[in-house]
Image (cartoon, rainbow, N blue to C red):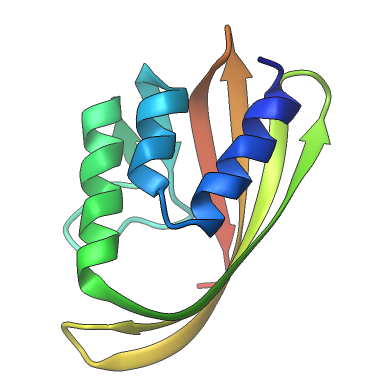
Amino acid sequence: MSAKEIGQDLVKLCREGKNLECIEKYYAQDVESVEAMAPPGGDRVTKGIEGVKGKNQWWMENHEVHSASVEGPYPHGKDRFAVRFDFDVTFKPEKKRTKMDEVAVFHVKDGKIVREEFFYDM
């Protein structure tokens, strides 16, 4: 599959709330996930598919999603694409509601996502 085709399916799966299925289907075992900032007590970089699945699971368990939109993909060459995410969520531990707008850039090699980078306002 091309990066654009992977991006199209990733967007579809994310819109359906099937994030973990997307990770299983498209992420390389040694994927690298890079956040714009380190979470409290954590690191900006998560390595490996199990780490990315854990990070995603933590996010889903700790956020109540009121609304979400996913736009894209926006291809860049043959090996990258970007996706825009817009969320209205409540962070459950603090009961704090916020709107999140972020862009993710995905790097593809040999039909698998090998790197994802997230950009958002801190």
